[in-house]
Length: 294
Picture 1 (cartoon, rainbow, N blue to C red):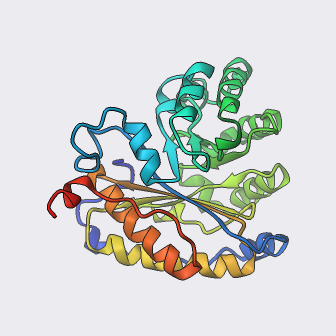
Picture 2: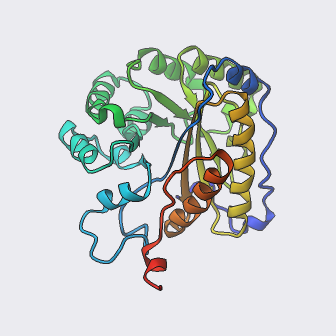
């Protein structure tokens, strides 16, 4: 994931900003005392996750499912999944595994939320075949999709099939720099129970808005392949602890790297510390190349 990449990450202030004032109000409405946690990578293919799979692994997803409890499914962004494909993916994973498919780029990038009823219907019909393994679908808007097209976004949300949980990632900086439009958009998300995605990446600190619109934190974390990657994760543990105390119900945390082979290592570190902090017993993924040394 090259988005937000910088030449020298040591020049970036990686500290987490304060919560948006509305975040506490959103969490206060929650009645849940238990935090449901999903942590995963963005893809499962062997080419990117070098050193993760044991030698001779025949089915990457099946093995991935033994190491992680979820996947941010980027494959569906590049091509419309068929119901049969979704069922195959579902059957290869454990009972408690969750998929978080990205809406196909036909919707977000090519048609730019215009005349998309047919594509949305096809996509929703396919991913509903994940059944209980469907975590949340997410829409990633193009970098140049701006607030001038707010009405398109509003119609998309109003028409979205309510039985499919949805998160949205806004990318253009104008969504965040104009306080009035940001608040208006977040209120739209709240009204329709849409989760506002938070992105933590070096070159786009504006996307670290810390504004929850549901009691769900959907975080896309992009490491910089630097030592600071680990201390940044420590900071996230502390923030999640605060959110849990205030009522956070679900945490969806997906780890990316510019060099993706490091994603499982970062994920393992993060999961180990989540288990210590929250008393959970989420499986800690192992790197096959590390295991083979012993």
